[in-house]
Length: 196
Image 1 (spheres, rainbow, N blue to C red):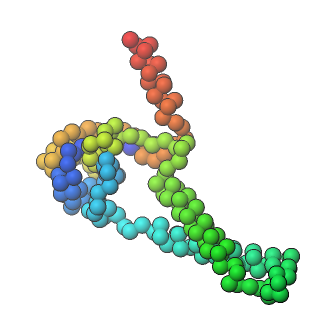
Image 2 (image 1 turned 135 degrees about the vertical axis):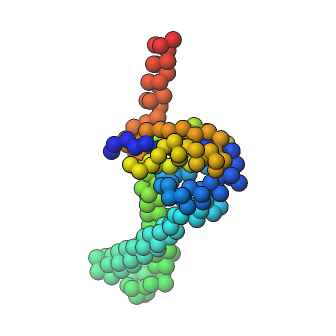
């Protein structure tokens, strides 16, 4: 994917960030993302994000696990390898409930974790651009994607009036790519040593 231009505004406090997010949305700018050092209740609503469908995916995975358990156990114990357990019927649903429950939970949990990692583009081998190194420490970072109609200087002034204490323009890959941060950091260290 091609690199895009972003205007990055940093805020000291969430009390300044929330009104700024609302102002940016009302002004019609496209918010790429907001990075915070800790979860902020209501930020997704302020950004205009829709409710997650992860719970629906979990339900579907759970039903898949239930169906898999019932169909496999019933096929094994009634058709493929029927055994006589003290005269009990071959199709004994109450005895299967613990296995059905466990497979439902397993499918749901594993499926939701994989779906969450896919939607958030998280994996040990995936790499994304870091817009500000202190976004996980003490800085609230709002990243606004520039379009062909965006006037960067006006946007920088708008963010300054909204309370941003640090504003910069970056060109970055908006998606993810394969790679690791340790190789890039090693390259930066080697370049710094060779320059010095």
